[in-house]
Image (cartoon, rainbow, N blue to C red; front, side, top):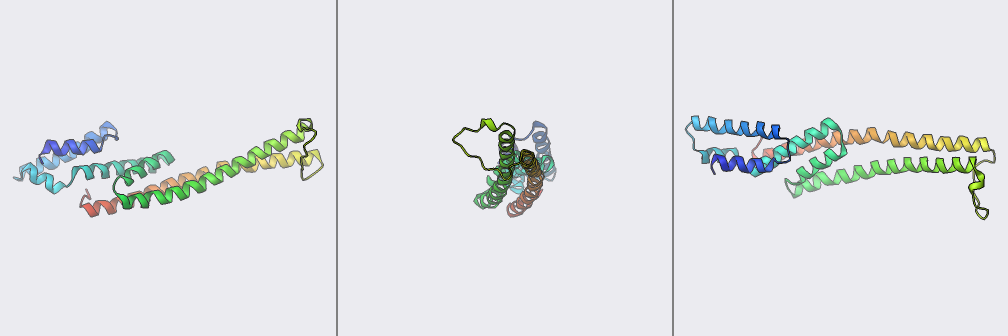
Length: 198
């Protein structure tokens, strides 16, 4: 394969990256071709030595998306990185997807639990402040007959729910950063397997 075909295939694997990153990567590989030509090698020999441009493109795209997930701590950025890792092979699919599903489920359970506390606290507060809102044929059981205790309990539920919900943000960001490092390690293993450690 000649230089133009190699670069075209490489760039097609990088099309999700920002244009400046694509230009930097292309310039690096053009330098490889220039250095090889100076050493008297043909474009076909240089292409063969560099490796499969499709795999290189997927690996570079994965590396960039992983770096973005590490910087931002965003779950959506992590999901994009996971999809890129999954694109490297079936084994990576299992390695990337399983921990994401488990951790995301746990984080969502914590968030839903917190929101449930907030909702139940709001309902209890409304029932405590406006008892006439309850239909005559409905019975509401509260832990105390004292209106002040009911209001305090309601506010406590709302505060607890907010703390749980807001508290789930830090573990979520930490999870994103840990998974991004995990993906980076996985990507380095894949690069070594394909001989593309540059």
